[in-house]
Length: 127
Image 1 (cartoon, one colour):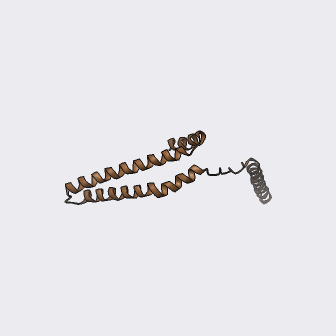
Image 2 (cartoon, one colour):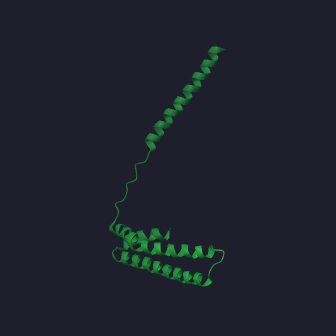
Image 3 (cartoon, one colour):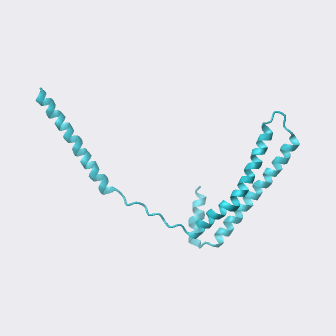
């Protein structure tokens, strides 16, 4: 009885070891090469630089007006004239932000080839 149990345990252990070795070889052989990162092209660097300077300021301003607008609305006794004034400022800051982004993309497109533009703006469409 004891030797039979040891034989069964040995066969199970052998099966697991063979399975482990087969899986190890399989993953070693089928492992794909690492994806080479494409070098960043000039327009992407310009895009990031501009975004950090011009668009970030417009976003910050828009965010401040949005925060003030909702804070005023959250008050138990809100001033309707103040809310209207903040709403108007919020609309203006959103318009400024939109115009800044549009100008940025137009300037960015001027420095691109047709292929670069298709790749860059094609990726933007998918977001």
